[in-house]
Structures are given as C-alpha cells and as structure tokens.
Length: 399
Image 1: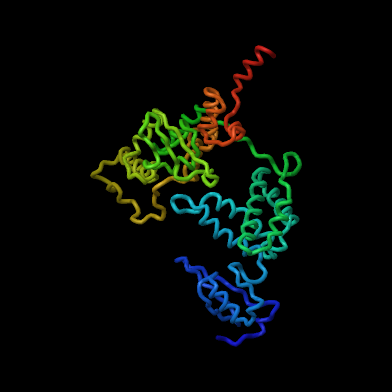
Image 2 (image 1 turned 90 degrees about the vertical axis):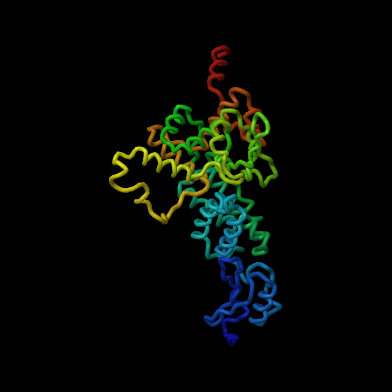
C-alpha cells in the first residue's frame, strides 16, 4: 500500500472511483499519487470500508451506496443514463427511445452545467438551460417534456442519496412554458394522412413494410406495438382476433392494451404467422430476401453469363438485416417511399390519426377511445380530428 501523501487532506480526500466492466462486475478503486488501488466490487460495503480505512478517516467518510464527496452534475448524468439504459430497454434488449431522449437533453445539461456541483443546480440554472433549448429551435411542448426529464433525473439522484432532496424540490417550483408567453416556437399539429397518399406510398414500399402500414391503418395501433407483433401475442380463438402487445406505452401505469383485429387485417397477417411463437412477424431479413429475389427475376444478362447469383455479395457485411423492425427504421422506410411516390412525406404516427378520425366519424368518440387504447377521451380528441363535413351540414341548416 503506498504511503499516504498530502492528497489525503480532510477537505479534499481522493475520490471513490468506479471501473466499469463489460461483464457487469464493476470494481471500485482510489487513486493515490497517480497509482490505482483496487477496493473490491463497486458500491459494496466492503469496498467502502477499505476506502475509508485507506484514507484514514472512517468517521468522516460517507459509506452509503452513493458517491463519496461532493457530486457533480456530470456524475449525476452518468449514473442516471446507466440506470435508464436498462430501465427503458426494449423487448429485443436495446436501449429504448426514452433513454435516447434523456441522452439528448443531457448533452445540453452537461455542456452548460456539467462541471458544477449537483447541490448548486437550481431553478435559475434550469431556466438558463431552457433558454438554450429555445435557441436550439426546440418546440415549446418538447422543451417542457425535456425539462421534466431533467427534474426526473435529479429526483432519481436524490432517491439514491447522491444529492439532497431539496435540489429536486426546488427544481419542481419552476413552471412550464405557456403558449404565447415565451420565445419558444409552437409545434405543428399532427394531422391525418390522406388515404390517397397512403396508397401511392405503398407502391414504393417493400412488401413487408407495406403490409405493416396496412395493418396499422386498419387497427390504429401505435408503431411501437406494430413492430413487436408475435404469434404468441395474438389470440385467434374468436372471430375477431385479440392482440396483446408484450410491452406498450402505458404498461408501467398498470394499464392493459388489447388491439382488436378484424377480417381484413387477419388476411394480411396470415402471411406471417407461420413462424415460431416468439418470433417477430415483420422481419427486415424477409424484405431483403424479397428484394434480392426481385433483382434476380429482373436480371437481363443470361444466368450462363456474367456474375452468378450472390457472387458479388459480401460474406460478412457490416450491417445484417435484423429480426425485427424498429420504430425508427419503419418510419424511415415510410418517409422515403412517400418522397419517391411524389407525395408529402408522412410518418406512421399519422396513420394512427387517420384511423382514429375514421372510427370517430363512423362510431363515435367512445369507439375511437377504445380502438386507440386511451384512458382519457381528451387524449383521443387530439388524435381523432373532428369531421368538417358534419360542421358544414350544421352550418347549412342553422347558419
């Protein structure tokens, strides 16, 4: 053990550090005179006691699971992102969209306040960061959501005893941005996409993605629910099938989600149900196989001449087609096909609005609420646009 030097002052003891491991067994260490001294498993009471004994101030050293000494905002960010990477993991084991959104706002927080102490991060600092978001061109509603994510990060840190509870309490006193009361721009309302544009786009999509769009148009389900469909999640015992996604947006609130699947949608899905019970229905590798088969069929050069089929293909390409589409890859395929079709670029989320508007027009708001899986009819009204034709008919009679 190296001799203790002047680093071990009471005011600035060496930091209790973490060495990350790919195998999940992180180690704790302390650096003294440029040398690492390993203490054992990170966060364990044994490593804390060794650390305390090493620096010679057992009574004054914090041996709780949280970091030792003053915590910086950067340390809070790193710890929280490690937590959200696992907490918001998708069914295929990848970090979820929420983790990505937290990472996006964390970049600004890190740049503007990362080196400061977390205990000093108050409402004024959060206001300054919010101004940066406005300057970046983020919309008002998105800024409010990102500010809430920052608050949540500090609440989480307080719950792990990394910082004082007074920090998130103070941050909670900051009001959100209100429409017309700030320089933040307003978001453009998401409107239904015209069925004519959908039809034109489908002609430029791979068959698998086109079928995904058709299923979403008929059911009004979320893109995230569509891409994870598996045979084992679909109850086919009755005339109307019932799809229960393995995970969904409001699952953490204890809400159930059931998507009713009628005959038209069933006819599409039958092409994909001959899989393993837990295999995803819609797979990019199927699209790639069909694309290659179409290229082979369109080949002009005789098979006896030129390259043989597949000879120009890389043995180990850098990117392999996966077992499931992501929400992002599905959206990109749709928008690119729309551009090729010469129509306004649209996203799968607008298909949900289109389906909701049709259901509300034909069956009423309650039916639209059931189809979309909303717990609150006010949310459904955002998706289901009012039928202008009805308003026009009223105007003709009483206006």
